[in-house]
Amino acid sequence: MVGSIEKRGKDSYRLVCTNGYDLNGKLIKHTKTIHGTKKDAQIELAKFVADVQNGLVIEGKSLKFSEFTEIWNRLLRAMLHRAVYWQLIVSNPAERVQSPKARKPKFCIFR
Image (tube, rainbow, N blue to C red; front, side):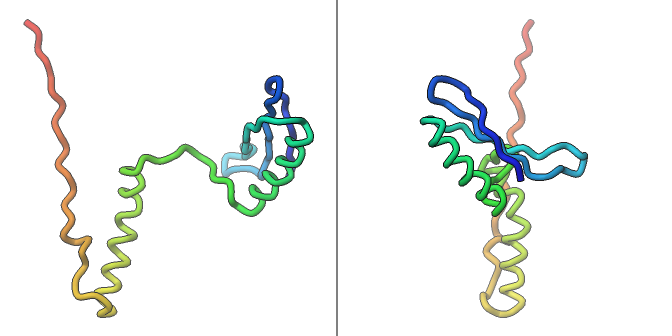
């Protein structure tokens, strides 16, 4: 794993750490900006490289909570369904949840 430091401003540094290649053969790069001295940047780079190696740095865009719940709702529902099957709970509370109805967009027609 390779790490480097780029000077950004007076007391600003960008830490760059590569972590192999993705499925398309593109280099996976993680970045972090810190403020301080060059020595501080070197210390933080060592920590940052260790975090990337240990899988503590998450890549990709952040999710909205609604997107997160859509992804994990099938898992939560399945876990509760299994708990009902094993007779740990009487019923699955996720089965009673109804999705909110989508609102139709309002259109304005000008004459």
